[in-house]
Length: 251
Image 1 (tube, rainbow, N blue to C red):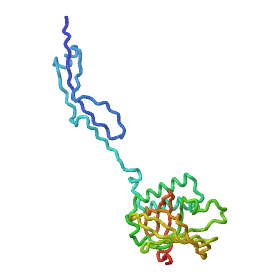
Image 2 (image 1 turned 135 degrees about the horizontal axis):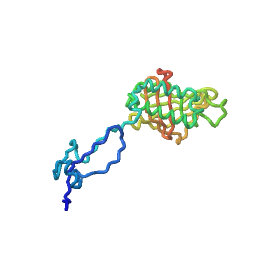
Image 3 (image 1 turned 90 degrees about the vertical axis):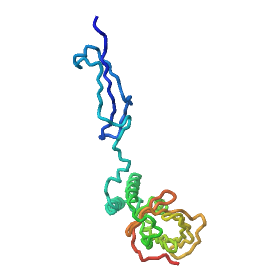
Image 4 (image 1 turned 45 degrees about the horizontal axis):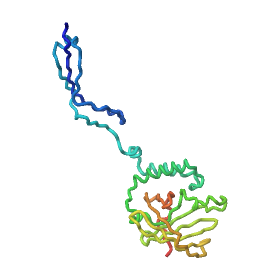
């Protein structure tokens, strides 16, 4: 009767995944696997009863993948000038945000966040760039845009002045009502303030004391000599451009 002996092949296994994909499914194998062959295979293996085959040496059960954990926009290589141009082009047809659809708002917010990542002024409340008169060119605030009014009764432009040295702010509307309001600013950190409004001026002339509940918070998330991006405590986005760096809030 022919012998029923079998040939044993010991294979030391290790797998390193290809770097072409970041998603893998692996089945873990023991460092040495034994494969059995019938004795008829002996001739092909020169009648050797066992053969050890060492694969290229890797660390056991350690998988290395070349995966980037940075957001895609961090790879874009865009500088602040390029991003600002893209932002201004997107804002231009939206009537300061009054004509923005939800899709427009999402797009503007995405570009603004991209700009915020390249902000070089880390402590805007300590920067002279903050001082002056700014024009609001985009916001998501329906109350500021006055979208509940007929278009003819909405203010044509909105401005905000800030004196960082004395922590005062002033909001102003243009025609047809010219309303104004002033506020005290209290720093919460180097880029965020609590805002307490203290006096309204109806038609720019009639003073009215602001109620105590007229308050909020504002965080400056991007600042340079031309553009400022801020976010309010109610989730609204504000984008303003500098129009007069010499202007100061009246004392």
